[in-house]
Length: 152
Image (cartoon, rainbow, N blue to C red; front, top):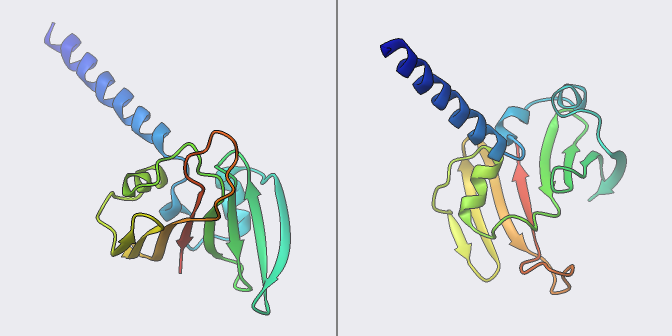
């Protein structure tokens, strides 16, 4: 009978661990240092790709609509440089949102709760920012914001 209860206990721990993993939308630490090919192996084929020039630098971008319209950005080094979450509308505008991206929930380095939350050097990332954008919001959205992860 002891073995039965131990087995149920282990199953419970396993299921709890699986539930926790399902809560993560995108594990940004797992993607750091990866190429577009390696990330495609992890996340699957992106919904779209394109190149744009920002401040004279060409940036290759992969878009994953099912991941809150994530843009994964690459510079000429071919490794991921940054991630922008463009539609985090189902997530709270709060530090707790970090957990959805595999990061610890810690107090921000700087904040203005009416505009942004910012972390410097969080888990090896040089910058993480939740920032509000424009006043024009999609219907049913209470806070219009983006999330920026600098993976350098």
